[in-house]
Image (cartoon, rainbow, N blue to C red; front, side, top):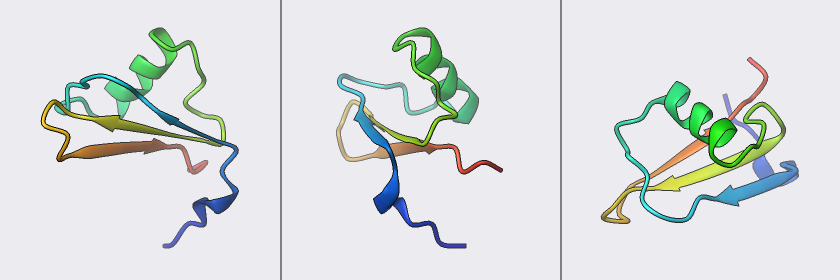
Length: 63
């Protein structure tokens, strides 16, 4: 299934080092607790690890 991300309301790039061992639940908790944002909105959150060669994207597609 393909998604069209061009109409996403917000895109946040999380600065700093993120523990890339975190899964979906851990990243969603980080967004809620640290940044006080709603991970279920029409928003993309991008996370980078220490070496900056890996990225994770958190996006709730409503499913």
